[in-house]
Image (cartoon, rainbow over all chains, first blue to last red):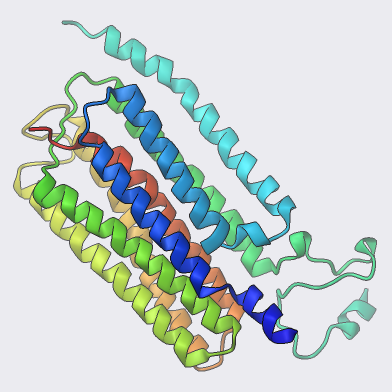
Length: 103
Length: 220
């Protein structure tokens, strides 16, 4: 019983390797995608989406957040998302700069 | 107050998680997590905010520029950056193995896995240094480059330089942890905390790689 608890607490090698293969695979997909002619918005959305999936895998399994108290994830993640969303408020201004450049 | 200190067992290290009889009785660890580990999580979120700010500032500059360079040839730059990504991801796996070994009490095994992680970090730094040298040789400076917007150099070198600094600090940190843990001076929790920092460094690269490299591949 203790040995089983220990192993879960320590984490199974198989799970880690499984996550690792997914991470490498998703990276390969990203590199492949970057050479496709997709249009900036779609490319950005796909790359960011894939990166967020990779980040979630690392945070949940390698950093073990999935097995911690849920309240920790609920404390940390919304704070980060909130700040990023606030920062993104500046993008309309960058588009203004682009469109107002003297040609 | 002092009765709680008396009930703490002699072998319990400072900062380890404490289970409560009643939550209002005091001596409880928030999130049932030791203070070192919680402290590292809070630091990681703050550092993630810093890198987010830098990445968004870079994105802002890029969106506002009609002439952003896309200088990364498949060979050598994109291949090198992809190898760097694989190296960092693999070093995260070795780190996870180190934490696992540490929790199972296998001190020398954990130290060896940490050593493998450090090698990954060093390989990353060497490859990245070569990348920098190539760009500098091609004429990229902080506010000047042969291809386009003068902001390219500053944003590239700041982002990747700050990240590289984090990797270098991580390698030193891991070395200290490996040495002390191998000799029995640190606990498995300390190894886990250093692992959290290392995974964070990997996480940041997960965003720098597509935003800086993959969006600037040279299409022939």
